[in-house]
View 1 (cartoon, helix red, strand yellow):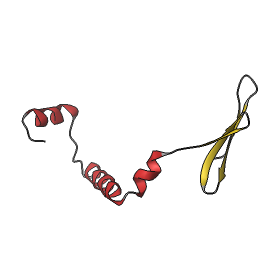
View 2 (cartoon, helix red, strand yellow; view 1 turned 45 degrees about the vertical axis):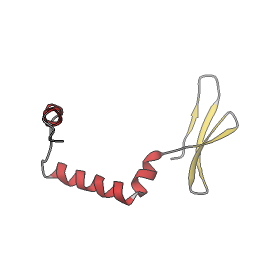
View 3 (cartoon, rainbow, N blue to C red; view 1 turned 45 degrees about the horizontal axis):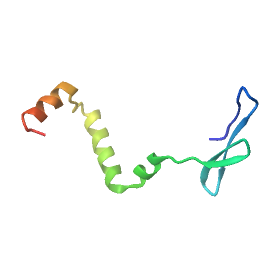
View 4 (cartoon, rainbow, N blue to C red; view 1 turned 135 degrees about the horizontal axis):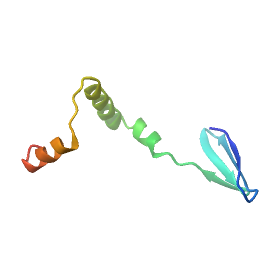
Length: 77
């Protein structure tokens, strides 16, 4: 992700990568971009849960919100 934006007031916002991390610079100040998704993707347990969910979706194993509410009400979840 590398871009440069110019705000209406003339401030330039630039993005760049440094030491394998992403940063933006606004008015000369540097800010690291924090992406919590990266941490979730690197957690093996969460990654396994995501893959299982994706598999369920591909197989059509879906529940509507109303179905889930009824399961909770009946103590099934």
